[in-house]
Length: 247
Image (cartoon, rainbow, N blue to C red; front, side):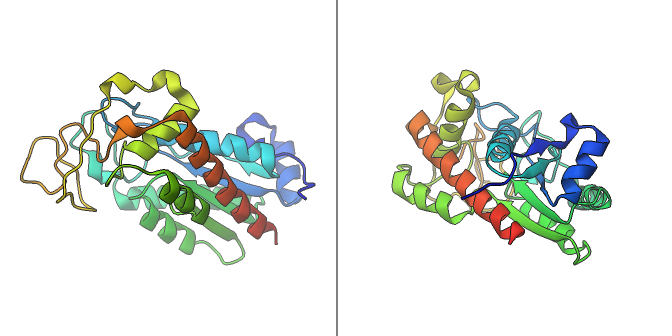
């Protein structure tokens, strides 16, 4: 049974309290979630950030972690064709994260969990973590790749294909912030030839990632209940990773 103290948000503490917690061995958590990235006509641009912050907040209630402010700009080149979406160069993003990790290490943290809600961010985050000194334990938790999340996905997913602003992601947002989900604007977009990777296009039908709405999947199949199950699985995956860092 977990008997550790509840976690905290670093930004809400004084510096002596941050120092005390890191010296006591609290695992540092660095959430990564886009604050400005298209998610179709029915979801807000900060969908990734909402997920990262919700998960970090839930983790604080369950584990002795110290959560740093989220990294809200990152490497998201697939969505640049949709107004409002912002992407940094890969090198810029990777260097920024590495500098943040260096500062967290300088504060005294010995273990870090990177809580990542992106896909294109995975490789640069791996590179940034790999360049840190071995004395600092870093685990990269890609929330859509956890074993418990994948298991729940297999059990509840109804859409034939998807991957962005789809049944799953829309369900998660319904559970987190239903007020900002416009289900009356949800549009299905699935094609049998949809490429797995590469930039989306809203205007070129010959592009293998053509999606006029920015959706890939069927968000009309989303529900709050599915979202709650997916979030619970994500949180269990994250908690297991934190426990491994304490081992």
